Amino acid sequence: MADHTAEPPLPSSVTSIMNPYELLGVIYNPATDTLIRNSPNPITNPNDDPDTKDVDLNPTNNTWIRIFKPSQSQQNHEQLLPVIIYFHGGGFIRCNANSTILHDFCKSMANQLSAIVLSLEYRLAPEHRLPAAYEDAVESLVWVQNQAMDTINGEPWLRSYGDFSKCFIMGCSAGANIAYQCCLRASELDLAPINICGLILNQPYFGGLERSKSELRLVNDKKVPLVVNDLMWELGLPIGVNRDHVYCNPFVVGVENLQRKIRRCLVTCSNEDPLVDRDIEFAKMLQGNGVKVMSWVEEFGFHGMAHTDPKKAEGLFKVVKDFIFSQD
Image (cartoon, rainbow, N blue to C red; front, side):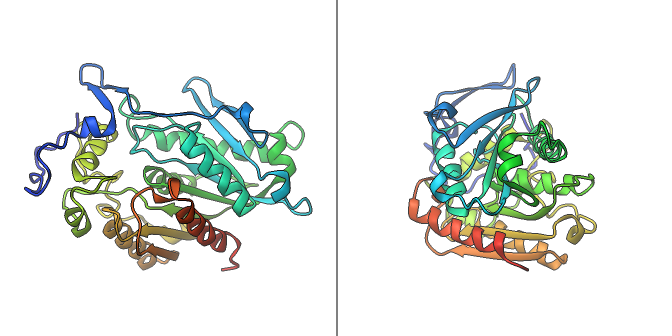
């Protein structure tokens, strides 16, 4: 487990009976650094949806991509569609690309944004601690590049419907953390002919040893209480580091030429999310480094709201659509 000996104690206001393992529905085996995941995780088979298919990315790592295209009624056959490379949330330790709640979210996004959505099944921690998920994310971008270069045998849906000149990297929660790190790494690669036009971070999952005001204000939040937040970082980070590692805390190490690595970024968050203060400061940090930033703060809401509340999802998709089709 990660070394948190230098951390301050949890605030006394944390409910003492909260067991983060029970709240997450997991059992940890320290001898093997593995989890038994008992929380309900209904999945959707791609064969049940004619507008969805799965393709292998790296059989050795058991990673794959679920592709979503708009339904026939939503498609504009006269123009190619933007491509969104999407990374799901789950605190790095839970959920899958075929989880029904995530499948339905991506399907709605493809229809409402008129876009091709590629949802990555990346390796989970603690069995595969960070940066494994970051590596899988970059590999998914290289896969998209390979499809764009292979005009004969490339993935048919991408070849027929996707506009490789309008690709976006997107993630929700821990997936937004992955998206950010993926974008930084991708800036060092020649990904032509695909063009990364922007980074979309929905309620990005960052942390640090020092507690933020929103974490303390919402210490017993129903979605991300502080004890759960701490445990997910403990299971996700490399062994022997704490929450001031750069994978968790984006403020501890400056990034050179950030405006070159990230052209444009949308950051969305909610005032009733314990992560909101860090998200707002993160957006300010990007802007202060020359990145063109669009921010959207939902006054009422909670962490992961767009996955369970259709109206919240509709609001998010509208903001994302404006960002994607903006000329800025």
